[in-house]
Amino acid sequence: MQTNDRTKFLGGSDAAAVLGLSPWKTPLQLWQDKVMPAMPENADPDRMRVLNRGKRMEPYVCDLLAEEKRLRIVGRNNRYVDREYPFLACEIDAEAFEDDGPVNIEIKTVSPFKAAEWGEIGTDAIPVHYTAQAMHGLMITGRASCVFGVLIGGDDFRVYRVERDDETIAALRAREVAFWREHVEAMVPPPATDASDIERLFPRDAGSAIEADTAALVALNELRALEAEAGQLKARIDGCKEALQRAMGGAARLTVNGRDVITWKTQTARRFDQRAFQAAHPDLFEQFIKTTESRVFRLR
Image (cartoon, rainbow, N blue to C red):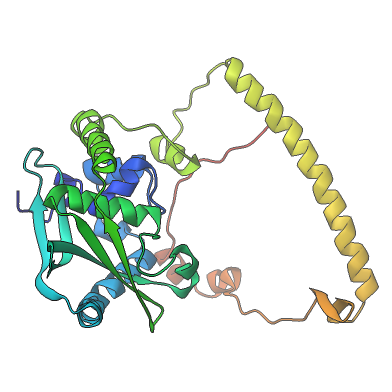
């Protein structure tokens, strides 16, 4: 299988989602990507910008890694397919030869705000979703090691190393095969894991009613109690804020032992006056109206 159609296989970046470890997508969202992929125009533009920026930086970071570790790069962006299961594949950012043989290389560009997720340099202390990606690549290629070249911000370059763990790989392989067979091929969605998954499964109401079962009644009673408690807490919070605002008067800052504990400053905001624009340009306004649908959950 040599194809760029990601609906036809599970790749390295899918491994964490299969395990429920991905920060970007749930197993259900991964299933939808495989069986009913979103149109390109519906893709998250912010996420796409980050991905495209990282792709452009890959050659530079790879060169940094090769220079620092004296690696001889022998391949870039090569695709490999599992010998037993053609729906398991990986694309390795780069490959290099070491004394013990070839190693996989993964290149990552990371926001400085995510730096704390990366541990001691030279170890395997990396985010767990990247460990899953590394193990997937080692599973497909049969190699022993994966080296990560990581550029955090613009100048914090780090190197990490993940060694092959056959027990972990066997468990990962079983989960990926089961996911493909039981969900993708069978066209059966995996269970929802959060509220966004539920909204994806049931985007529109059917106009019908169902009688609450025991589990629903328990959740309903707990929700009513929590909503009442939340209302009481909000009233107390609002009362504390009002007392503090009265105490501050026209002051911009409230201090304790000289340290700011509350600020209440004047700020200016510029917002688009939709109502005024509609009144002044009704025809133009109608041209840019976008109709959306969503389900609204209300406790009665």
